[in-house]
Length: 302
Image 1 (spheres, rainbow, N blue to C red):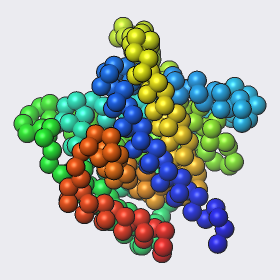
Image 2 (cartoon, one colour; image 1 turned 60 degrees about the vertical axis):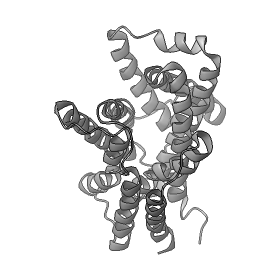
Image 3 (cartoon, rainbow, N blue to C red; image 1 turned 120 degrees about the vertical axis):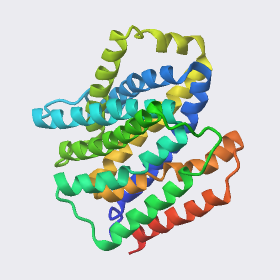
């Protein structure tokens, strides 16, 4: 069996781990300077790092001789997935809390699988479909565990938060679909990530400047050097390495399988939460982890 047979699947698992680790680091940094600073700083920092990597690996600071159609699909992917999708997710976390928001994000593999079938004519066999459902069930079982910060009142803000969470899930799914459309052929994933990050950064900062918040993020980071180091490390791991790996994943595996494996972040973050914040892992979380791993085993073994 060639070593590249599971390249997409392994890249998806590595992307999920990168996002779990970067979630911990962004939490540490956000507690020091605020979540808005983290959200505003991560994309331009990632863009600077990607420029350096692009120069080192491909010889230019940014992609050249890229077809307009490819630019369009990748830029649209960045705006939908990295700017609008993440903004909707962050707003959902404010309105309904992180746990319920994460439950809604567990719908990403299912939405992605259906979207890939509609737009890309991708079809999964019955065993892959079973693996997706089992893995998603395991993740949902873990993240739906009742926590202390749940939202009890189901008023207008609650349903707005649910809509934002669904918007975040839809944004991530459509971001994957449009990325695949821009990754046809042997286009380098680092160039694709640069274009996506550039488009997302322009949109996010244009909105921020119009709202009068332009200079705040970097002023806050200059005032807290330790937070700045944590956020830079998190940016290298998540928006740079994690997103690069996610593009490799959708380039070499089906959208449904790749998005399912990348949805394992809530599972992978459990030991990190125990190690960093000393949060106990419940029996429910362990059971959901076993169920999710069973789904992963189906993908790799059958």
